[in-house]
Image 1 (cartoon, protein in one colour):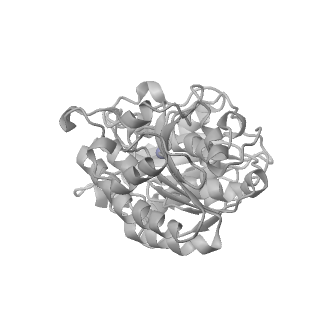
Image 2: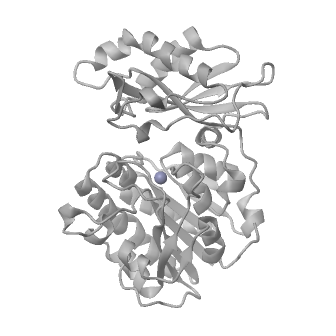
Image 3: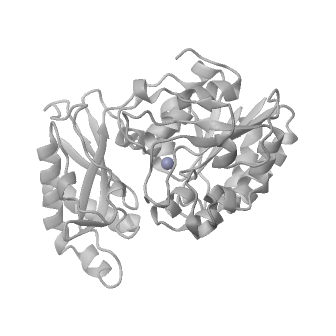
Amino acid sequence: MKYAIVIPDGAADEPQESLGGKTPLQAAHTPAMDEIARLGVVGRSNNVPPSLPAGSDVACLSLLGYNPLEHFTGRAPLEAAAQGIELGPEDWAIRCNLVTIENQTMRDFTAGHISSEEARQLLATAQERIGSDELQFYPGVSYRNLLIYRGAKKPAPFSRDTRATPPHDLTDKSVVDDYPRGPGSDLLTRLMEQSAELFANHPVNAARRKGKMPASNIWLWGLGRAPRLTAFQQLYGVQGTMITAVDLLRGLAALVGWKRIEVPGATGYIDTDYAAKGRFAIKALPHTDLICVHVEATDEASHQGDTAAKIQALEEIDQHIVAPLHEALKKHGDYRILVSPDHPTPIRLKTHNHGAVPITIAGAGIQADAATTYDEVAAGKSSLSFEDGWRLMGYFLGKAISR
Ligand SMILES: [Zn+2]
């Protein structure tokens, strides 16, 4: 049996006035996803418990079949795993965005999608001036960087009660009331303020101000210790492989013991090479039980509030990933295929939200329901619903586990 999962990140949305009351999934031309709905079932899944932040970290942990209430420790530890950064039991990983804040307003949580090389230079300055043996800055990809607190000698001041707001939740809003709160928050806030002074006249920003968003400072959030997860194969008896351009998903894959495939041209952005992702997924099929293709573009389009870009991303995913992958699966004998976003990212909000996402599953042993399309409205009519989204994996694999 072969399994395939396609995750159009943040694809779930609301009816849009500009689309005549249709959701982006309804408006997009997605014959391959609709075929899965026609051959199989549609339903709903809720990947983010109300008590946890609505983000890809919690949602994807859930989508991969792990109860986030039991296992979620924060986003940054997952990204540290992706980069191969070892975390000791006393260490904390902290997400270190490069952002553009002007007049205390979050203009851009990506600092204009700053290049990795520029980010590396800014983080080198931060390490030199405000880093230490305890505080280590690790450059990642573009605006997505990490700060690691090494707590072996001097225990970290943070706890599970430390709160820090994701910068993508603050787009175009005042940041004044959203600095970190709780244990250790004064340290985080101080570092963010110090970075603003360090970056103000930094050569990287002097160059960027000629037409690009400067990286005004670091924004620290998503902190946590390393989670300890039982290997997916041990839990579900299936070997998984992940294709993604996003560190968070790479980290999740690493922590659950999945293989990872890097696809050239996969950018984690709306200009990603969809067809390459589809080709690599098909190439991986003979060598894995389960292939998972994650695409960030739909989420990015939502963050930008760009309905047309979201629809285009959905159509590209449908044509270049879902369609060829489903065709390839049919040649492999028994298979099951699942399409599921991790969480809704409504264009109206420009950020992630709690709530159910539409799912569709087809393949061996799945009795077709009445659905003919894959979208929020069709899913809303289904009786198939996973209030605890992490249980979907057991259903999909036909291997329910108790925890
Ligand atoms: Zn997401």
